Image (cartoon, rainbow, N blue to C red):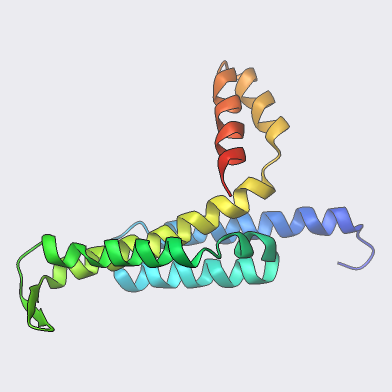
Length: 148
């Protein structure tokens, strides 16, 4: 990296981060909880190293508390109740589904948080216009601008 301009290093960092994001997406193709956990953990560490502002934007304790309560509540409604917690029958399958929702939510929220800063919206608009999808570029830009 010696002799490279700061902008070139920044561009290289974006490509490395993008490659890690693609790898994390690939890890989540299956429905395995441990792979979803690994992908989310890898992505959070990547953000901590490559884009701390994106990671800071994810700091919303009230949102995450409600999200976790609702997602884990799926253990009460999904699947056969085969486990007892605090005298209440819950579904192991439902708890796993809720945990998967939480892990994927963390990953997707982090991915969008990073992407909103990393994507050059002018390039997206121009590329979508070239292929005849001009409104798509505007929609993507608007969607990213709405995010916190």
